[in-house]
Length: 111
Image 1: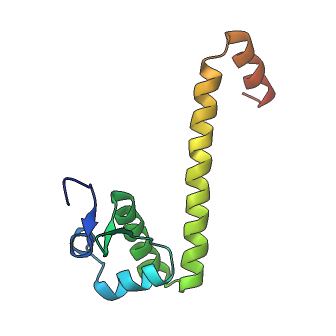
Image 2: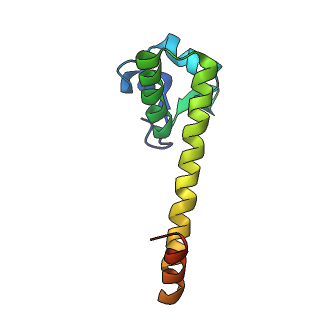
């Protein structure tokens, strides 16, 4: 990994994911389920891309999903991740409210 940027080269990304090869990585990029950044005209990958590659390899190996299904599944994963972030922010904001507000909200959501 390039220390300056925190990005991995294509070769480093392939080495980091046991079941990934250049053909599979090309498939993921063409299907737009992995979107590399560009550094001086070369594709580079973040740690989150590596995690996505691991998941995508699982989906391909375990379920033999076609590219359009990979896109749909990863879109849902992205939505869940965004929703989780929203929920964490909401819980932080609620935690800063007075106790009576927190209790009223908890009561309304059935807890």
